[in-house]
Image (tube, rainbow, N blue to C red; front, side, top):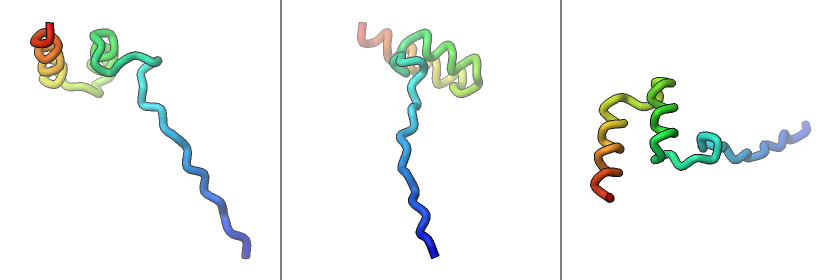
Length: 51
């Protein structure tokens, strides 16, 4: 009986190399229903608080 080798592949969760917290990335996630309007507003508020 041969053993099957399982390769652990790294999954890329990035959005075209953009930071998940960037406005453009948030807009894309919002359009794809991956981010709720409430989550986007929270992230936007956090970003504005840092300025």
